[in-house]
Length: 279
Image 1 (tube, one colour):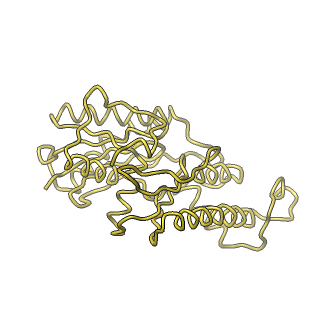
Image 2 (spheres, rainbow, N blue to C red):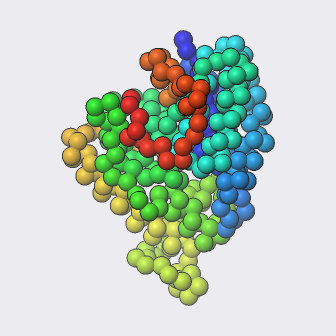
Image 3 (tube, one colour):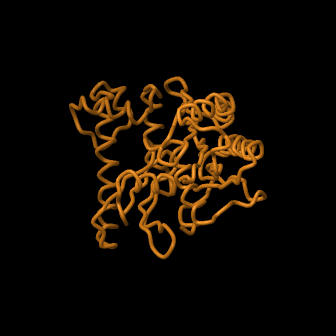
């Protein structure tokens, strides 16, 4: 069996996973103070700082040695430039030190393929929701086709920014903490400028109202795509599915089909679209 190792660091989470099945999947998250986002330079520094520790942990948990690894996989994009480059340099270095082939993986497809592996879904309509991308996707003619997407702000980024306004903690994630407050709902609000300051509404009301509005929009567009495609399966991926294992899984599939990334193409691109990749 092929054993692949995947390096993921497209945003504030550094993950390194080893796949035959999932053998290991440790990760470390860069947490900023409440009300602050993560800057590309500082996030890249975090990834470089913890790379050796997470790599050692991944090998130890998987009980494999470098000579057991068949292929090195890394996130080529999309994502934040500086973190992407920092992790790509790490993956390229490991590939050279271990004398292994290397594969650049599309982050979005990594989410989808891991979701399909875990759920056993065959040809689902995919709702992909992460910090930087929100897309409704279906597979057709060797590519994942995008039926709809946000062009201003992704849902994950929307939640992150909203959490910063309310000074919510980034640990374990802004979206999780919004969800916890939303469970304490008192009022649904249609519009929310300066409402907390007025004292009429609570942060819990705002969190609930944001979730209900955003999630209703996602459900509606996904249902329309299902009807268009005649699909009976929905696969929701992104965000909480972050890890190195998903990059290893997608790279594992590419390697088994004979794909290798030429060394001169082992670069990164922040806007590596889902529908650019033949699959």
